Image 1 (cartoon, rainbow, N blue to C red):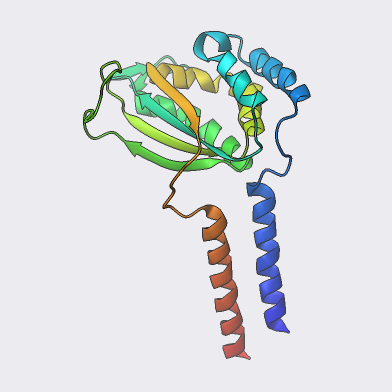
Image 2: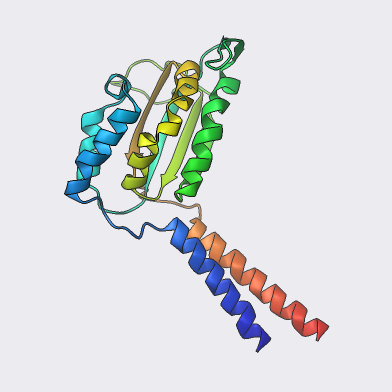
Length: 211
């Protein structure tokens, strides 16, 4: 009987995880798009200067309700840059933390997370038909639960000041959404399920030994 409670608790915990991690609302309805774009523009008055709003609209309009991964290439400024909050010179990496400390918790609350973050350690090996390497610093691969979550994060007025840190630290960047064709790293759906299963099994064995 004890084993049933242990495995029941593990299943309940996994259900709570999926309730947070999965997109249960489906794709964005056509009637939602104008409202989301309007909220983004209201929270980011200069959105048209720094973002491709037409591309974002098309991305929302063609939503399939599935998760996606945003590829980000980032060039951090060389040397020190003025901190947007204090005006004091700081390294670009330190200034960038002013943005990530606000963005990452908000992303996690919506079931998103960094899938890969890596720093560049060499020049282009294959390159043709593209501009010269500007000196990229970091590659980021961010998982989003849904396109609706992306829109709501961008439209969150709390990030108005946080974007100043990103713009100060990053003189160049570009990003685009992707869907993996081959993914050898296990999804959290698998790792969390395995971890809860192992924990339930160990707990059941421990209880049996103590009985």
